[in-house]
Amino acid sequence: MKRSLAAVLGATAAISLVLAGCSSGDDDEGSAGGPQTLTLAGWSFATTPEFKTLADGFHATHPDVTVELKEYDAANYDTQMVADLAAGKAPDIYAQKTLKNFYTYQNGKQLVDVSDVAAALGDKVGGIANYQADGKTYAIPYRQDSWVLYYNKTLFAKAGVKIPDGTWTWDDYATASKELTAKLGGPKGDYEHIWQSTVQGFALAQTQGASIESGNFGYLKPYYDRVLALQNAGAQVKFGDATTNNLTYQAQFGKQQAAMMVMGSWYVATLLKQQGSGDADKFDWGFAPAPQLDKSTTGPNATPVTFGDPTGLGINPKIGKGKEATAKAFLQYAAGPDGAKALAGIGITPADTEAVKDTFFQLQGVPQDDLSKFAFTKHDTKPENPVSKYTAALQNILSDLHTAVMSGSKGVDAAITEAQDRAKNEVLNK
Image (cartoon, rainbow, N blue to C red):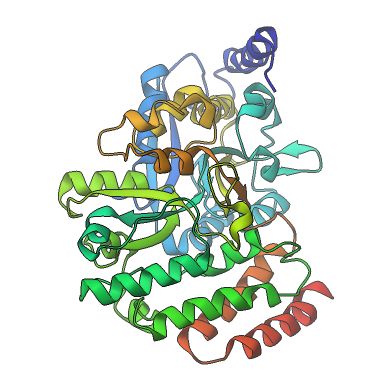
């Protein structure tokens, strides 16, 4: 749906008037007419350039506003953020790293109502509905990643294996992985990262009727059976080896230790940067739709099903009132067409993909083949973490299931049964 120009200008003007109306009496640094400093939380700045890109881009359009970055540990981001919010030390603006914790922040009254920003942006920005509660919006998505299949064209050619063509099911993927492993004699056919997402995200998205909140997790079984079979065949690094050796997915694919890898679209930016810096090898690569459950969602006339949560920005309620309007303007910039183009310029998939459908493939190093373009533009992306008061607790149980199955400490059936019992007794019936 397209909004009228008058509606766009009216909504934008509303935020501009809020900015203009801030008085210097709101707080020490609160005058919208003078210099201001906003603080922005992020993680892994060396490999995640989006935060600096947005900070610099906003400063270029708002010279009196400086956006300072505060780096958190990627693996413990939410734990550290919750602690800083409780201690009153959290930044003015903080990213919603995982959608599963949005309910915790919103229910704990740790997010400012940004419904006015959402209204200004309209329906071109995907994922806004995921940050709504009780009819209000509490965070604004600036990126919407979708998981795709990355593949090394150079290694495929060396092995004499046909590259993905957009019609692959998971069985096709498994067959190719085993063949690549046998013919390459060194690199694995694929790399499966240790996150539960790599298995559970696809199972939830692609299995009709699957639901985390149902407490029935049988839909996970065929996905785990397949991954375990690939590990046992030697086509993947074993989960235990990956965790013990602290393997990174960037190095496994970027250093050509694996010919294929399913990963989020954010990896495009990282791979481009690492190939430019020498942290990744130079090789010909592309990306394709993620393998599908069956043939019904494969091919050029179908829409492949994948998963991916939006990544949003929220405002700390303890921000000075004089800076709140400026922070809202930052959210509008980050999620709007200017921020989207800035993000696409470094290979990030923004929430507003309509604004960047041409820009993205003009980047040096981005694959130019038709399949990569198809994978970027056409997909049914389902949330990994449907927003619910139960999601975080259920995902923690499913994380335990993942570790138990992948480490070999429990069989798939036993782990699923245990997880279902825990979901019922510890979460859903309380």
